Amino acid sequence: MGKELFDHYPLSTIVNGSEFKLRRVSKKFNSLEDAFWHYGKYINWNEEKHKKILQLVDAGKVSGYQFSTLDSFIVDNDWINLEALNDKGQLISNMKML
Image 1 (cartoon, rainbow, N blue to C red):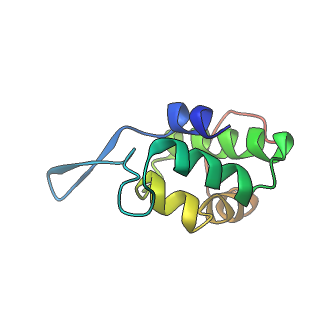
Image 2 (tube, rainbow, N blue to C red; image 1 turned 90 degrees about the vertical axis):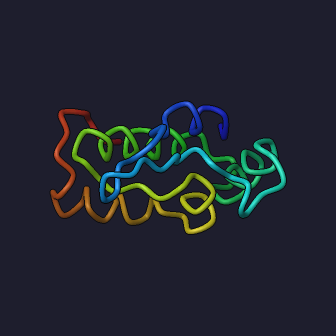
């Protein structure tokens, strides 16, 4: 699941004209595998929740959501923010949510 999240996550973002890489995990985890494991643990290895998070990430990319680094996204459970924005109709996407 974590690898699939990694593959869906945006590569980078531009802030004040500077590019920032977003698929970083080194500030909070020892390795990608460690980040992947923690992500699974945070969502209780729930496949349906994982699929919804992937859809929310994709919708966030389409709507211009300002993503944090992947490690912060995992630790902060930032999919909760994406879901709240989606529920309020603030994520514009043609994707069907679960």
